[in-house]
Image 1 (cartoon, rainbow, N blue to C red):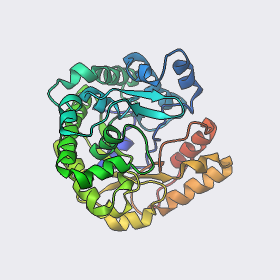
Image 2: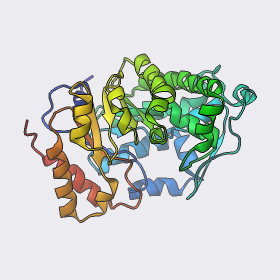
Image 3: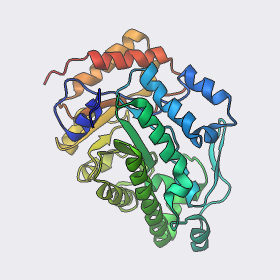
Image 4: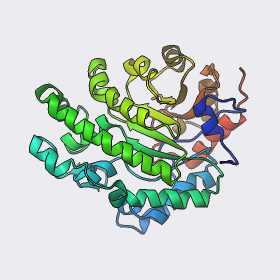
Length: 346
């Protein structure tokens, strides 16, 4: 397929690029007044996720208003546990909450189903991707995504966000067999879900492992990376990106996975990570999102400093986490323009 701008795909595949591609995690969201206008007419976040035409509209907004090099479908990682049988609510200023959680083998039967057609339960995501692809008309690639099994596991066990996810980690010690069974089920459904997105038109997929950093390195290999590898091995139609927040120690292991791109959080040193993973992977990141609270000139300086630290063309520019909702969109534009004006020196 011919894109007017295919920089992201070239960078992910390690092909030659004339400049670094740039997009932002959470770019379709509250930083944009256009998003807030759409959201204000709805009952809440979930209604927006589940209304394909509106999800497509807010997916495209950053391409129109911020001039990013890719769109990412507007959805949520928690659609997977909900499709499996655990309903969640998104509570304003609190975050996601599950009224039921997985604690026993009996809970697996009730709330961790795998025997269902993904399109029947998550068809609204497929439809949103199809509408988005048509509306984008090959201007830029479209990224699909899912949560990593370990991160989804954390929500299904703890029932919401947590600083420690001690309930989830407790299960790894007290009932590792149950933990592996649940992770296996999440993995199976996630593969089918990502393949549905790819069939609908996603050009690249990203796996978000938001809570990778709460596990030690050996546990992450057993309960995190093992299942990410199963997904990456199953997805061979499009490039795969993994963003494992806080997983610094696991980077050498991640370098051996079938993921094309490894995302870095803002605590990771680009030159160190490049030494760890070598030249066979594209790196993505990793400006501190809070840098965008700086003045325009400082945003430009910090962005150029980051770009100067890249010693390879195998790089996609992003923040080290999602953009914060109260950041001025004009600062985001300065970040993007700085990347686009930067001349690759190697």
